[in-house]
Structures are given as structure tokens and as C-alpha cells.
Length: 265
Image (cartoon, rainbow, N blue to C red):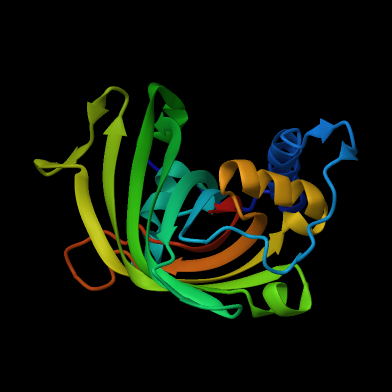
């Protein structure tokens, strides 16, 4: 089955709009937790710098384009993935949780993190004789990625200068479980069933915008009733070299970016 190579990327403004709308919606819902008593809206804390509850955890929901690097293994001599499933990026949805085990006050936190993401590449299967068109079934590649990282949240600007930006850096290992299929059946080649596991190094750099900057008094009240210290919108660039450390593993990693929404508590 062959398809012509087509390179495409989703609109950047579309991804940014999705992430921004998600963050604002979550912030607006959380902001409703602010109360009003007989003295009016809850006021500004006496000590704005130190009202926060202790921070131990961070949680993220992540969205971004994904296209596995299967064809890069062939150095331009063949493009089996593009020929079969096209070259357009798909959406990967993921989550991540970080334990802020070590904290240097008003500077950074450091600790382990764990995350996972899932995507599906699917397209109508084409007959080898292209004049016959497409079959009544899809060819698909499903990828479930998991990673473990050492994560640093550098929040010195936010804590000391009230600049609502936090930098993140991540370094660790990742693996992907993948399945290739045709219709309701697993694909196979020369008797080998189309599924496997690929692993390799993972690293990322990110920038987070602290939404507390927009409504500091509501953020104080939310922290008091729920222990949520901060809410963020973030963008992150990552690289996963899945399959690069073994010659018998398929290269299903990617180098791309994600938008997301994070909580710190």
C-alpha cells in the first residue's frame, strides 16, 4: 500500500487557542470559589509573599501534535509511514504528575515526574494496485508513550520579583508501546505481528505562565480552601528518541511541542 508523501502541520494558532481557552475556562471555574461575606469580597492578604500553603505536587494535562520518526530511520531511502498513513501530524493527549521532593525556597523545586500520552494514526488502506483505490478498512498505528523524568521548576522570578513566569527542565527515559492494525485485525509482516516496544532518552524545556497574576485575591482564597497554590498555562518543547538505542526497535519517538494546563499544590 503506497501513498504520496505529504508534509503538513496543524495551525499554530489553533493549538494556542485550544490551550488558552482551556486554561481560562479552568481558571474561571476555580475563581467561582471566591466568597463574599458581610464585609464584601475577601480582601488582599496582609503578607502577599507568604500566604501560600506548602507545595509538594504538580499535575499537568497536555495537548500537542505528534508524528513518530519511523521514516527517519531510513535516511530518505524509504518512507513507509508516510506512504501508508500520510505525513500529517496527529494529536497526542497526555498527563503528567511531578513530586516536588526537594525545594530551595523562592528559587526552584526538584523531584521525579511521571507522564503518559496516547495518539492514533489512521488512514484508509490503499491497494497495491493504486487503480483499485482504497479498501473498506483503515490502516492504523496506535502509540502509548510513558516517561519518567527528573523535573526542575525554576520559579525565582515568580517568587521574588512577581514576574509570572516559571521555567521547567526535564531529563529522563521514556518507552512506547505501539500496535499496527488493518481494520479490526493486527497487521503482520512475514508472520511477525505488528506490535512492539521502543525506548530511549527524553528531555524537555518549558515555560509556564502563572494565572494567579490575573486574580491574586481569588488565588489566595482558592489556596485556603483547596491547597492549590498556582494554576498555569504552559508551552513545552520535548524530544523523545524512542527506539534509538536498539537496532531492532521501531523509531516511534518525536521532537515537538505541547500546550497544557497545570496545577501546583
